[in-house]
Length: 42
View 1 (cartoon, rainbow, N blue to C red):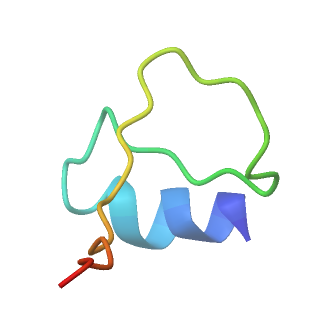
View 2 (cartoon, rainbow, N blue to C red):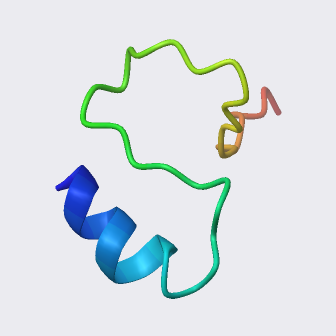
């Protein structure tokens, strides 16, 4: 999956600092995480 994403998506789009990890627990020092809405208390 990671090699497909790199070859077919990231490289053709020039996304040189983008990577696909098969293991979400891998330590990546430059990782950017998406957000998710917090539940409001009121």
